[in-house]
Length: 112
Length: 120
Image (cartoon, rainbow over all chains, first blue to last red; front, side):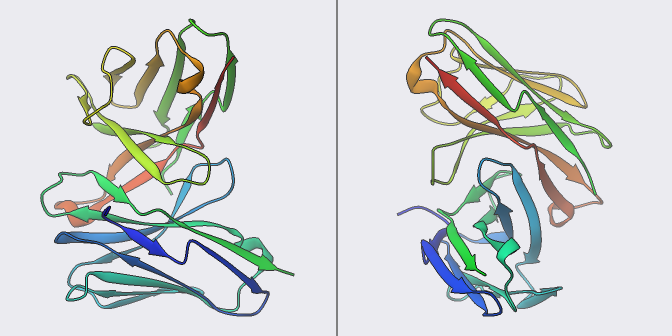
């Protein structure tokens, strides 16, 4: 299967709830990044976590990285309707130059 | 933050015509840009790496003669879909590599807003 698999594929929650998305990968990485994409638009970089980091915060976002399990999670706290979008993890492998490999993405719907 | 402009945002063309998509880094120089293709509700598939002043590096399965890439300056890369056919209809996204310091850990990608290509 592909590098950068995500689950769930789709997540629907109510405003105010927390949303957790997971990402797994296969090779050794330099860093892992999370991006957001609104429908029909480009990607917006959310947060980058380096391979020697375990947790990182940015506003309502919390990212964890477990290199032993080759997995990462993105937590969005106190979600808002405006958080509705697709979220992708992307890994920068040790041997891929500067090429990112994207996961399949999680479609998050936050209901008002 | 860094800005990448992609143009046009949407194009409809007849089968057999060629379409050029531009990707510009507006406030930084990008020696490396990337072109992706995305199908509805799917992930981004890397098509090629665009290197300023040299030939692009294409991913396996991507036709070089079909998808022409030119990176003639440090702020502009273009993707030309030649002799477009309906199966080329897709969302194309570019990104530019922004280096904020030494080492790959200081590299970030900034994305254009994408181009929806529809070939009739």
